[in-house]
View 1 (cartoon, helix red, strand yellow):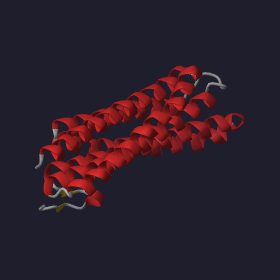
View 2 (cartoon, one colour; view 1 turned 135 degrees about the horizontal axis):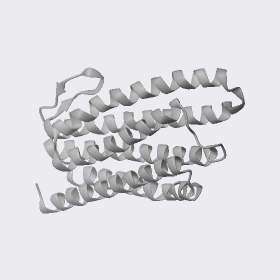
View 3 (cartoon, one colour; view 1 turned 90 degrees about the vertical axis):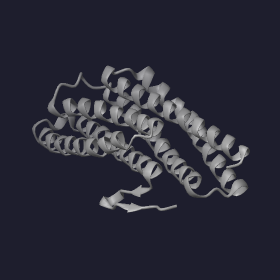
View 4 (cartoon, one colour; view 1 turned 180 degrees about the horizontal axis):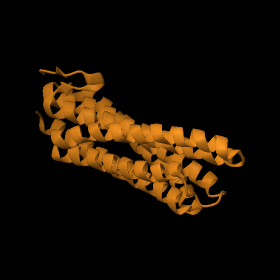
Length: 225
């Protein structure tokens, strides 16, 4: 590996960690805005999305420049491919955090929420934050064990989303005047479920980065490069 390639990869890793940190902060703030009914904080999350978008574009451009200039192979190429994929997943999580912030503003118009569906939302939010945090830990520590736990956590967040769907279906029948509120809660549930999916994608990418295994869709192929 040339000195210039090593420096470029080090800078790329640093930028990916910066994007991870910004995305995590956005998600935490969006969830806080939802739980605390804080419309000012929700607006701040919406305004902050441009920062994540700019970082995502910059990181993608860096990856393409490294590929063009240095034509990396083996583990270096694997790292760049992984960085590109994680970059996209993090940007998508940032978008979903903005969606949650929009719903937080909408839900703040209604009475404080005390029902089964919103209780599940709080559990999902806690799980989603932990999954994203563990993605970062798995990447930094190069830990397959942490990444594997994220795959298990995704199953739990999916289960909670299904429970939310069933609960809100009942609430729409029993309390139709608040139908718009319940639909907004269901939207939040869906956004959190998608965040879980994105975190799962990152975990799968980390496993590929560390040992070359492709584990998507139950596969277990090994990249021998």
